[in-house]
Image (cartoon, rainbow, N blue to C red; front, side, top):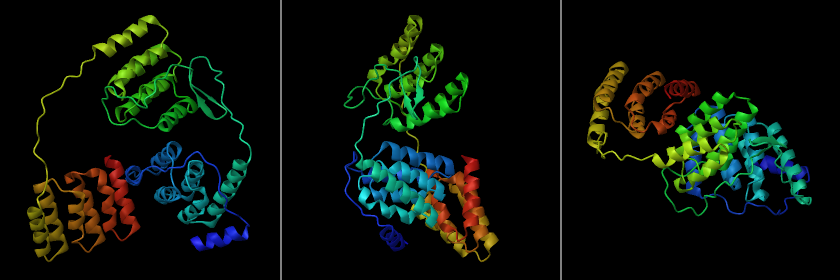
Length: 372
Protein backbone atom coordinates (compact mmCIF):
# COMPACT_ATOMS: atom_id res chain seq x y z
CA UNK A 1 0.00 0.00 0.00
CA UNK A 2 2.94 2.28 0.74
CA UNK A 3 4.06 2.09 -2.92
CA UNK A 4 0.61 3.24 -4.02
CA UNK A 5 0.86 6.28 -1.72
CA UNK A 6 4.27 7.16 -3.13
CA UNK A 7 2.91 7.02 -6.68
CA UNK A 8 0.08 9.33 -5.62
CA UNK A 9 2.53 11.77 -4.04
CA UNK A 10 4.68 11.85 -7.18
CA UNK A 11 1.58 12.45 -9.30
CA UNK A 12 0.65 15.36 -7.10
CA UNK A 13 4.09 16.84 -7.58
CA UNK A 14 5.10 16.79 -3.96
CA UNK A 15 8.76 17.36 -3.25
CA UNK A 16 10.08 16.49 0.21
CA UNK A 17 12.35 19.17 1.60
CA UNK A 18 14.13 19.67 4.89
CA UNK A 19 12.42 21.97 7.36
CA UNK A 20 13.59 23.55 10.57
CA UNK A 21 11.75 22.07 13.54
CA UNK A 22 11.78 22.27 17.31
CA UNK A 23 11.85 18.50 17.87
CA UNK A 24 15.16 16.92 16.92
CA UNK A 25 15.38 13.90 19.24
CA UNK A 26 12.46 11.45 19.66
CA UNK A 27 11.57 9.94 23.02
CA UNK A 28 13.54 6.83 23.94
CA UNK A 29 12.38 3.48 22.61
CA UNK A 30 11.92 2.06 26.11
CA UNK A 31 9.75 4.96 27.26
CA UNK A 32 7.80 4.91 23.99
CA UNK A 33 7.16 1.16 24.24
CA UNK A 34 5.85 1.62 27.77
CA UNK A 35 3.40 4.32 26.65
CA UNK A 36 2.40 2.28 23.57
CA UNK A 37 1.65 -0.75 25.77
CA UNK A 38 -0.61 1.44 27.91
CA UNK A 39 -2.50 2.56 24.81
CA UNK A 40 -2.82 -1.00 23.47
CA UNK A 41 -4.02 -2.16 26.88
CA UNK A 42 -6.91 0.32 26.87
CA UNK A 43 -10.16 -1.21 25.58
CA UNK A 44 -12.25 1.99 25.47
CA UNK A 45 -11.68 3.61 22.05
CA UNK A 46 -12.28 7.17 23.29
CA UNK A 47 -9.82 6.88 26.18
CA UNK A 48 -7.32 5.15 23.87
CA UNK A 49 -7.43 8.17 21.55
CA UNK A 50 -7.07 10.52 24.54
CA UNK A 51 -3.91 8.71 25.65
CA UNK A 52 -2.51 8.87 22.11
CA UNK A 53 -3.31 12.59 21.84
CA UNK A 54 -1.61 13.33 25.18
CA UNK A 55 1.45 11.39 24.04
CA UNK A 56 1.68 13.40 20.81
CA UNK A 57 1.13 16.77 22.48
CA UNK A 58 3.77 16.32 25.17
CA UNK A 59 6.56 14.41 23.42
CA UNK A 60 8.79 14.37 20.36
CA UNK A 61 8.19 11.30 18.19
CA UNK A 62 9.78 9.96 15.04
CA UNK A 63 7.71 8.81 12.06
CA UNK A 64 7.94 5.13 13.01
CA UNK A 65 6.61 5.87 16.51
CA UNK A 66 3.74 7.95 15.10
CA UNK A 67 2.82 5.08 12.79
CA UNK A 68 2.80 2.51 15.63
CA UNK A 69 0.42 4.64 17.70
CA UNK A 70 -1.82 5.26 14.68
CA UNK A 71 -2.03 1.51 14.07
CA UNK A 72 -3.18 1.06 17.68
CA UNK A 73 -6.20 3.36 17.19
CA UNK A 74 -9.59 1.99 16.17
CA UNK A 75 -10.93 4.25 13.44
CA UNK A 76 -9.45 6.21 10.55
CA UNK A 77 -10.94 9.36 12.06
CA UNK A 78 -9.03 8.86 15.34
CA UNK A 79 -5.86 8.06 13.38
CA UNK A 80 -6.24 11.21 11.28
CA UNK A 81 -6.79 13.51 14.27
CA UNK A 82 -3.86 11.93 16.11
CA UNK A 83 -1.49 12.27 13.12
CA UNK A 84 -2.46 15.92 12.65
CA UNK A 85 -1.48 16.59 16.27
CA UNK A 86 1.69 14.47 16.08
CA UNK A 87 3.03 16.09 12.89
CA UNK A 88 4.12 19.26 14.72
CA UNK A 89 6.33 17.25 17.10
CA UNK A 90 7.66 14.73 14.56
CA UNK A 91 11.45 14.70 14.40
CA UNK A 92 11.75 13.41 10.81
CA UNK A 93 8.95 15.14 8.91
CA UNK A 94 10.57 14.20 5.59
CA UNK A 95 9.50 10.58 6.23
CA UNK A 96 5.97 11.35 7.36
CA UNK A 97 4.49 9.67 4.28
CA UNK A 98 5.37 6.34 6.00
CA UNK A 99 2.46 7.01 8.36
CA UNK A 100 -0.01 6.74 5.46
CA UNK A 101 0.23 2.94 5.65
CA UNK A 102 -1.69 3.03 8.94
CA UNK A 103 -4.95 4.06 7.25
CA UNK A 104 -7.65 1.83 5.79
CA UNK A 105 -9.13 4.34 3.30
CA UNK A 106 -7.49 6.41 0.57
CA UNK A 107 -9.86 9.27 1.32
CA UNK A 108 -8.38 9.63 4.81
CA UNK A 109 -4.86 9.52 3.38
CA UNK A 110 -5.69 12.41 1.04
CA UNK A 111 -7.08 14.42 3.95
CA UNK A 112 -3.89 13.89 5.93
CA UNK A 113 -1.80 14.67 2.86
CA UNK A 114 -3.64 17.98 2.37
CA UNK A 115 -3.05 18.84 6.02
CA UNK A 116 0.67 18.02 5.82
CA UNK A 117 1.07 20.03 2.60
CA UNK A 118 -0.57 23.07 4.18
CA UNK A 119 1.49 22.68 7.35
CA UNK A 120 4.71 22.55 5.33
CA UNK A 121 3.75 25.73 3.48
CA UNK A 122 3.11 27.50 6.77
CA UNK A 123 6.49 26.35 8.06
CA UNK A 124 8.14 28.15 5.15
CA UNK A 125 6.50 31.45 6.15
CA UNK A 126 8.16 33.74 8.69
CA UNK A 127 6.74 32.96 12.11
CA UNK A 128 5.50 35.83 14.20
CA UNK A 129 5.38 34.85 17.85
CA UNK A 130 1.83 34.92 19.17
CA UNK A 131 2.13 35.00 22.92
CA UNK A 132 -1.30 35.23 24.55
CA UNK A 133 -1.73 38.12 26.96
CA UNK A 134 -3.63 37.07 30.06
CA UNK A 135 -6.91 38.96 30.16
CA UNK A 136 -8.74 37.06 32.90
CA UNK A 137 -9.27 37.94 36.53
CA UNK A 138 -7.62 35.21 38.61
CA UNK A 139 -8.81 32.00 36.95
CA UNK A 140 -7.64 29.90 34.02
CA UNK A 141 -9.24 30.91 30.73
CA UNK A 142 -9.34 29.74 27.12
CA UNK A 143 -8.04 32.46 24.84
CA UNK A 144 -7.43 32.04 21.08
CA UNK A 145 -8.00 28.28 21.53
CA UNK A 146 -5.24 28.16 24.13
CA UNK A 147 -5.38 27.73 27.90
CA UNK A 148 -3.90 30.72 29.72
CA UNK A 149 -3.26 30.56 33.44
CA UNK A 150 -3.11 33.48 35.86
CA UNK A 151 0.44 34.82 36.39
CA UNK A 152 1.40 33.04 39.62
CA UNK A 153 4.89 31.95 40.80
CA UNK A 154 4.66 28.36 39.57
CA UNK A 155 7.80 26.51 40.76
CA UNK A 156 9.96 24.67 38.23
CA UNK A 157 10.45 20.95 38.68
CA UNK A 158 13.45 20.59 36.34
CA UNK A 159 16.52 19.90 38.44
CA UNK A 160 14.47 19.33 41.60
CA UNK A 161 16.40 17.19 44.12
CA UNK A 162 14.18 17.45 47.20
CA UNK A 163 11.68 15.06 48.75
CA UNK A 164 9.51 13.10 46.32
CA UNK A 165 6.55 10.96 47.38
CA UNK A 166 5.11 9.46 44.19
CA UNK A 167 6.19 8.34 40.71
CA UNK A 168 7.08 10.70 37.88
CA UNK A 169 4.33 13.30 37.35
CA UNK A 170 1.94 13.39 34.41
CA UNK A 171 2.75 15.61 31.44
CA UNK A 172 1.71 19.26 31.31
CA UNK A 173 -0.27 18.36 28.19
CA UNK A 174 -2.39 15.94 30.23
CA UNK A 175 -3.06 18.63 32.84
CA UNK A 176 -4.06 21.08 30.10
CA UNK A 177 -6.45 18.45 28.77
CA UNK A 178 -8.15 18.12 32.16
CA UNK A 179 -8.39 21.89 32.58
CA UNK A 180 -9.82 22.33 29.09
CA UNK A 181 -12.41 19.63 29.76
CA UNK A 182 -13.58 21.37 32.92
CA UNK A 183 -13.72 24.80 31.30
CA UNK A 184 -15.40 23.77 28.04
CA UNK A 185 -17.94 21.41 29.60
CA UNK A 186 -19.07 24.10 32.07
CA UNK A 187 -19.00 21.71 35.01
CA UNK A 188 -20.35 23.25 38.24
CA UNK A 189 -17.83 23.93 41.00
CA UNK A 190 -18.61 20.74 42.93
CA UNK A 191 -18.44 18.73 39.71
CA UNK A 192 -15.00 20.17 38.96
CA UNK A 193 -13.83 19.35 42.47
CA UNK A 194 -15.05 15.76 42.19
CA UNK A 195 -13.38 15.45 38.79
CA UNK A 196 -10.03 16.72 40.12
CA UNK A 197 -10.16 14.37 43.11
CA UNK A 198 -10.79 11.42 40.78
CA UNK A 199 -7.85 12.39 38.58
CA UNK A 200 -5.56 12.91 41.58
CA UNK A 201 -6.39 9.49 43.03
CA UNK A 202 -4.60 7.72 40.18
CA UNK A 203 -1.86 10.15 39.12
CA UNK A 204 1.16 12.06 40.38
CA UNK A 205 1.42 15.85 39.87
CA UNK A 206 3.97 18.62 40.29
CA UNK A 207 3.24 21.59 42.53
CA UNK A 208 2.80 23.82 39.47
CA UNK A 209 0.32 21.38 37.91
CA UNK A 210 -1.82 21.23 41.07
CA UNK A 211 -1.78 25.02 41.24
CA UNK A 212 -3.02 25.18 37.65
CA UNK A 213 -5.79 22.69 38.40
CA UNK A 214 -6.85 24.88 41.31
CA UNK A 215 -7.16 27.94 39.07
CA UNK A 216 -10.28 26.53 37.38
CA UNK A 217 -12.12 27.84 40.48
CA UNK A 218 -12.84 31.47 41.24
CA UNK A 219 -13.92 30.68 44.84
CA UNK A 220 -10.89 30.26 47.09
CA UNK A 221 -12.59 27.71 49.32
CA UNK A 222 -12.58 25.26 46.41
CA UNK A 223 -8.97 26.12 45.60
CA UNK A 224 -8.09 25.33 49.20
CA UNK A 225 -9.75 21.92 48.86
CA UNK A 226 -7.69 21.16 45.75
CA UNK A 227 -4.30 22.03 47.20
CA UNK A 228 -5.05 20.29 50.50
CA UNK A 229 -6.15 17.17 48.62
CA UNK A 230 -2.92 17.31 46.62
CA UNK A 231 -0.62 17.16 49.66
CA UNK A 232 -0.29 13.39 49.36
CA UNK A 233 -0.21 13.37 45.52
CA UNK A 234 2.46 16.00 44.83
CA UNK A 235 5.76 14.91 43.31
CA UNK A 236 8.00 17.80 44.42
CA UNK A 237 6.92 17.94 48.08
CA UNK A 238 9.69 20.43 48.90
CA UNK A 239 8.09 23.00 46.57
CA UNK A 240 4.56 22.55 47.79
CA UNK A 241 4.47 25.64 49.99
CA UNK A 242 4.25 27.57 46.71
CA UNK A 243 0.69 26.28 46.36
CA UNK A 244 -0.39 28.95 48.86
CA UNK A 245 -0.08 31.53 46.08
CA UNK A 246 -3.37 30.37 44.55
CA UNK A 247 -4.99 31.91 47.67
CA UNK A 248 -5.25 35.52 48.80
CA UNK A 249 -7.25 35.07 52.03
CA UNK A 250 -4.83 34.83 54.96
CA UNK A 251 -7.11 32.53 57.06
CA UNK A 252 -7.30 30.11 54.13
CA UNK A 253 -3.53 30.33 53.62
CA UNK A 254 -3.03 29.50 57.30
CA UNK A 255 -5.42 26.57 56.96
CA UNK A 256 -3.39 25.18 54.06
CA UNK A 257 -0.02 25.65 55.78
CA UNK A 258 -1.29 23.94 58.92
CA UNK A 259 -2.46 20.98 56.85
CA UNK A 260 0.84 20.88 54.93
CA UNK A 261 3.24 20.99 57.86
CA UNK A 262 1.17 18.95 60.28
CA UNK A 263 0.77 16.09 57.82
CA UNK A 264 2.91 13.19 58.93
CA UNK A 265 3.50 10.10 56.87
CA UNK A 266 3.08 7.11 59.18
CA UNK A 267 5.10 4.17 57.97
CA UNK A 268 3.36 0.90 58.69
CA UNK A 269 5.40 -2.24 59.34
CA UNK A 270 6.24 -4.00 56.13
CA UNK A 271 4.42 -7.30 55.95
CA UNK A 272 5.94 -9.67 53.47
CA UNK A 273 3.13 -11.47 51.70
CA UNK A 274 3.81 -14.84 50.13
CA UNK A 275 4.13 -14.60 46.36
CA UNK A 276 1.07 -15.93 44.60
CA UNK A 277 2.24 -18.08 41.70
CA UNK A 278 1.67 -21.39 39.97
CA UNK A 279 5.00 -23.21 39.61
CA UNK A 280 6.09 -24.65 36.28
CA UNK A 281 5.68 -28.15 37.66
CA UNK A 282 2.09 -27.47 38.79
CA UNK A 283 1.31 -25.72 35.50
CA UNK A 284 2.57 -28.67 33.44
CA UNK A 285 0.54 -31.02 35.64
CA UNK A 286 -2.61 -28.98 35.00
CA UNK A 287 -2.04 -29.08 31.22
CA UNK A 288 -1.38 -32.82 31.36
CA UNK A 289 -4.62 -33.43 33.27
CA UNK A 290 -6.62 -31.48 30.69
CA UNK A 291 -4.99 -33.23 27.74
CA UNK A 292 -5.84 -36.67 29.16
CA UNK A 293 -9.58 -36.02 28.82
CA UNK A 294 -11.26 -37.02 25.56
CA UNK A 295 -14.36 -34.82 25.61
CA UNK A 296 -14.41 -31.02 25.36
CA UNK A 297 -16.92 -30.53 28.19
CA UNK A 298 -14.81 -32.64 30.54
CA UNK A 299 -11.69 -30.71 29.58
CA UNK A 300 -13.44 -27.44 30.38
CA UNK A 301 -14.51 -28.77 33.79
CA UNK A 302 -10.97 -29.92 34.63
CA UNK A 303 -9.55 -26.53 33.57
CA UNK A 304 -12.04 -24.62 35.74
CA UNK A 305 -11.26 -26.85 38.73
CA UNK A 306 -7.57 -26.16 38.23
CA UNK A 307 -8.11 -22.39 38.07
CA UNK A 308 -10.11 -22.48 41.28
CA UNK A 309 -7.59 -24.68 43.06
CA UNK A 310 -4.34 -22.96 42.06
CA UNK A 311 -5.79 -19.41 41.80
CA UNK A 312 -2.63 -17.55 40.74
CA UNK A 313 -2.05 -17.92 37.00
CA UNK A 314 -0.18 -15.51 34.75
CA UNK A 315 -1.64 -14.39 31.42
CA UNK A 316 1.01 -16.48 29.69
CA UNK A 317 -0.10 -19.59 31.56
CA UNK A 318 -3.78 -18.91 30.85
CA UNK A 319 -3.02 -18.54 27.13
CA UNK A 320 -1.18 -21.88 27.18
CA UNK A 321 -4.21 -23.60 28.72
CA UNK A 322 -6.68 -22.00 26.30
CA UNK A 323 -4.58 -23.22 23.38
CA UNK A 324 -5.39 -26.80 24.42
CA UNK A 325 -8.98 -26.28 23.25
CA UNK A 326 -10.10 -26.50 19.64
CA UNK A 327 -13.53 -24.87 19.90
CA UNK A 328 -13.87 -21.08 20.03
CA UNK A 329 -16.78 -21.13 22.50
CA UNK A 330 -14.79 -23.26 24.96
CA UNK A 331 -11.89 -20.82 24.78
CA UNK A 332 -14.19 -17.83 25.34
CA UNK A 333 -15.95 -19.49 28.28
CA UNK A 334 -12.63 -20.31 29.96
CA UNK A 335 -11.10 -16.90 29.17
CA UNK A 336 -13.92 -15.21 31.09
CA UNK A 337 -13.73 -17.74 33.94
CA UNK A 338 -9.93 -17.46 34.31
CA UNK A 339 -9.93 -13.65 34.65
CA UNK A 340 -10.57 -13.82 38.43
CA UNK A 341 -7.55 -16.09 38.86
CA UNK A 342 -5.07 -13.98 36.88
CA UNK A 343 -2.30 -12.17 38.77
CA UNK A 344 -1.35 -9.74 35.97
CA UNK A 345 -4.74 -8.53 34.79
CA UNK A 346 -3.19 -5.47 33.15
CA UNK A 347 -1.89 -7.81 30.44
CA UNK A 348 -5.16 -9.68 29.91
CA UNK A 349 -5.68 -8.09 26.47
CA UNK A 350 -3.08 -10.59 25.19
CA UNK A 351 -5.63 -13.39 25.61
CA UNK A 352 -7.28 -12.09 22.41
CA UNK A 353 -4.44 -13.76 20.47
CA UNK A 354 -5.91 -17.23 21.05
CA UNK A 355 -9.12 -16.41 19.18
CA UNK A 356 -9.67 -16.87 15.47
CA UNK A 357 -12.84 -14.81 15.09
CA UNK A 358 -13.22 -11.10 15.80
CA UNK A 359 -16.61 -11.72 17.41
CA UNK A 360 -14.91 -13.71 20.17
CA UNK A 361 -12.40 -10.91 20.74
CA UNK A 362 -15.17 -8.32 20.90
CA UNK A 363 -17.12 -10.45 23.38
CA UNK A 364 -14.09 -10.82 25.65
CA UNK A 365 -13.36 -7.09 25.45
CA UNK A 366 -16.95 -6.26 26.45
CA UNK A 367 -16.62 -8.66 29.36
CA UNK A 368 -13.36 -7.03 30.49
CA UNK A 369 -14.80 -3.53 30.26
CA UNK A 370 -17.59 -4.62 32.60
CA UNK A 371 -15.08 -5.93 35.12
CA UNK A 372 -12.80 -2.89 35.29
